[in-house]
Amino acid sequence: MDKIHIERLEVLSLIGVYDWERKNQQRLLLDIELQADLSVAAQSDNVNDTLNYALVAQKLIAVAKDSEFKLIEALASHLVDSLLQAFPAVENVRLKLSKPDILANAKNVAVEFSRGQRR
Ligand SMILES: Nc1nc2c(c(=O)[nH]1)N=C([C@H](O)[C@@H](O)CO)CN2
Image 1 (cartoon, rainbow, N blue to C red):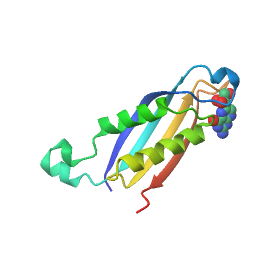
Image 2: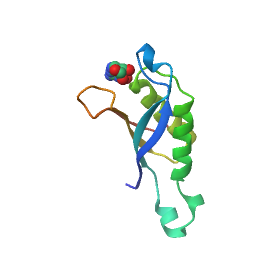
Image 3: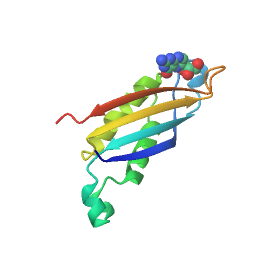
Image 4: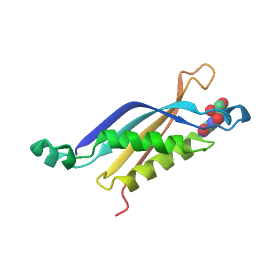
């Protein structure tokens, strides 16, 4: 089972339940695990034969920037759906969305979703 990992990707999004959170975008961190067949690229050494992680990151940054969800659950689910739709080569995605330094006395809060393609 081949995988690509993107760790601690910084994105900005308007996110949060409270009025004070609806004014400015907040910094969020994404950890993503993408299951895809990497065997062709491993042989060809050609980026066109693989899932280009730069394009995946670009997509996540753009989707987060254009979103205005209240809950991190809703944004994380939307990001997963967007990835599966934009990149059919992704067989399964696991995405952890962290909202750091938002909860008193905790370093981080996060949600995690794992989903596959509906083929
Ligand atoms: N399960 C969740 N609980 C809470 C969320 C959330 O997104 N999911 N959000 C908030 C606030 O927006 C918080 O980030 C600021 O206190 C509270 N609980």
